[in-house]
Image 1 (cartoon, rainbow, N blue to C red):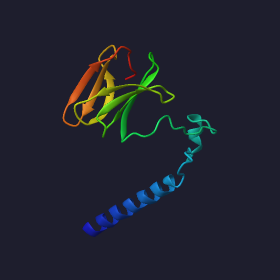
Image 2 (cartoon, one colour):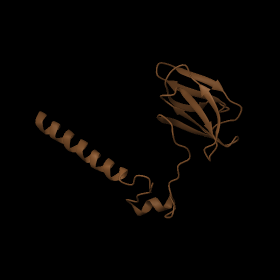
Image 3 (cartoon, rainbow, N blue to C red):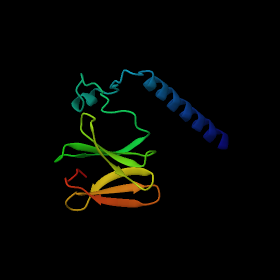
Image 4 (cartoon, rainbow, N blue to C red):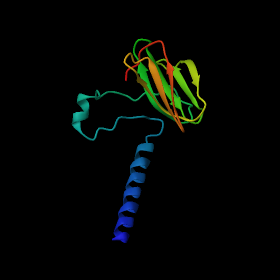
Length: 132
């Protein structure tokens, strides 16, 4: 039983590796791969993946603020939360005291940004309500 579990785990890892390799083979040509026609109901057949901004360490926890029309996202290695336009222009930075994992809006008015960090949860009030 133990050998079959190990074999299944190795096969699973090899399959994931092969899938990752084929996805990475696209390289600098981002694409939308349609495995089911139902995707066309959500994503236009001629849609192209576009890079908004690169050069981060490791991003996580992106949220959209409709009223201000900006994005907030964390860069874990940098210990910061960036404020960007949809076009990728840097509007500001929230410095954090430890590694940031995720961000999310809360409170009834959605004007409190909660920040999940390595050992704690922080919050900061913002001017515009975010989308929870």
